[in-house]
Image 1 (cartoon, one colour):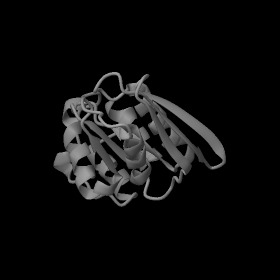
Image 2: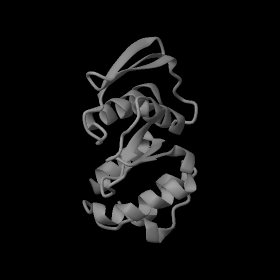
Image 3: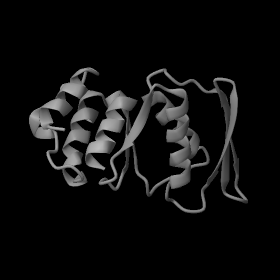
Image 4: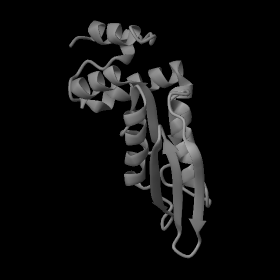
Length: 161
């Protein structure tokens, strides 16, 4: 797929991406950063950005989950969201329901690093219940995710990853 075809696919979803921001090399994620940043600049409310090395506070995962839900711009609503932190086990338990299905996430606070399994749970939840999916910028030391239409995430995954 050429640069113009990628630009056209993004334009169909309301994203005007300049040619210089579209990486030309299939399988090369190094240049994908410019595309990612261009999209984030165009749609900052769809971005979840956090320091992956610094998860602190007894409701830190609650706040992070809320950031992921907010990035869906109202597509996903959580009912009865609660966070319970056990200082002895250093586990934060998130419970809620989404579209009638009950969820429970046990989030460890043993280290300052955000647990990848929890991020996987958050992004899977949004993919199941929303019309979009999260794209992760893996070249960034920060946690950096964008919520985009599934077709665009699949296009980026197929062309660059």
